[in-house]
Image 1 (cartoon, rainbow, N blue to C red):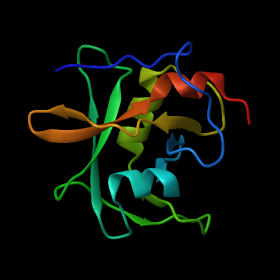
Image 2 (cartoon, one colour):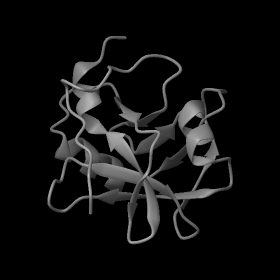
Image 3 (cartoon, rainbow, N blue to C red):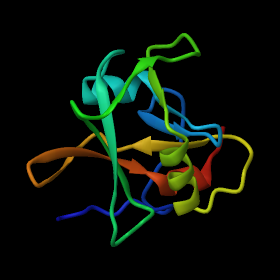
Image 4 (cartoon, rainbow, N blue to C red):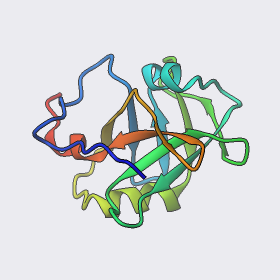
Length: 132
């Protein structure tokens, strides 16, 4: 696997209009309209998330026929969402998230190709430097 590092020094903090994926403690995982546009997602599509075992804070998202079914975002925007307490809590644990609010993470727009899969990086380091 060839990875590109995203950290607090080289990652722009989250701003409206950027592709994002958010994780809350209740298990809702939300994908912004911009992120849906980048990946090519719509309600009814399915996604899976991947964690790098060698670097547990590194997560990736992929459109996947065997994944979780997306629904329209409850906020009425152009984004999508699904529920998985197991995944959301695993992500929050991996980044040591202590806040009550959701962790909103930037999503890379250039996929990493691994084992013929196009994986979009969820830049968890960006959630630690929020400015909104």
